[in-house]
Image (cartoon, rainbow, N blue to C red):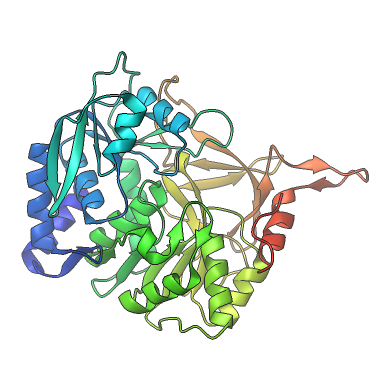
Amino acid sequence: MRRLFDRIDLFAKVRPHHPALSDGARSLGYQELRREIVRVASAVTGRRVGLLMENNCAWAIMDLALQKNGAVCVPMPPFFSDGQMRHLINNAGLDAIVTNQPLRIIKLLQIPLSSELRVAGQKFDCFLLTPAEKLPLPPRTAKVTYTSGTTGHPKGVCLTGEAIERVTVSLSEGVAATARDRALTLLPLSTLLANIGGIYAPLYSGCSALLPDLADCGTSGSTGVNADLLIATLNHVQPSVTVLVPHLLKVLVAAAERGAPVPGSLRYIAVGGAPISSGLLNQARRLGLPVYQGYGLSEAASVVSMSLPGLRHSGGAGRPLPHVAVRIAADGEIMVAGNLFSGYLGQAPRSEKEWPTGDIGYLDGDGELHITGRKKTSFATAHGRKLAPEWIESELTGSPSIAQAV
């Protein structure tokens, strides 16, 4: 992440007081951010450190300080079950956990609190661990991000700082981000997309990263959303850029159709993370929402393709970004090369030159990527036609009357 830290150093000199991070309770300019990263980096011990906390400035500072220190950051998704969380802690071989949820760690591990750490004016609890064994990490691993674990235990995806930084630069340049932008994060910072889109890309561009507690924004759990709070947040912070999952876009569209005010400051709304209904996208655009669809996966360090301003779009997930190459296999599977993860924690290092995503789709005549389903869920009808259920499900959930479909 050397280029990112060089940019933060530059902005600390030329725009020292320009807001870098804000979470509603506190705000740091670039100069103060740089000082806080250095201070926290010198105070944290441990080679593999887990972060369990809500979205806030401290999350971003801890993450950056660990990478500045050459340590490995392991985000701990608060929505993981206790069983998934224990697996993550043991599988990652954590030396330490920094959290503002100490009672959960005490309950999970039956260990006492080790020390306290102040970050961005807040107090956090530190637990020091002595793992029985440590699975080897691939060389230069900077972050281990855990998949959601839809089947079996979550897998730890090992990523280098270079791979993460390449996506960061592609996104920053693709959306033409400037210091005037205000990037609002409405996804948990324990997810890789929120790290890159909500912290790294804004700071690389010299703009302001807005990281409010998600509960204050009206989002909780995996599907709970308070539309009034969400709209109030958008109008209060006046962001220019944000990233939404389809469910949040659906809530925003429904609110806008009821006449709720949507801030005119928004110039780029990225949507991804799950299949999205073409009807919902068209509905959002009719309402004047600047919505752009994207596609990615953790094994490719997050974003692979993204619809970008100023380019003609044909309803897909945009063209592949410069840091990757995309090929469609004979059976329709999307193959990605050029910026891949180093391997899963505890498994043999990855040796493939390209990664089979498990998704099926196609590239149209303009080079735009279209996602049509998952390889493992597609089936043949009695008439011999291959069918992927995801597009049916996405169209169903595009209706305001249907929350989930399977």
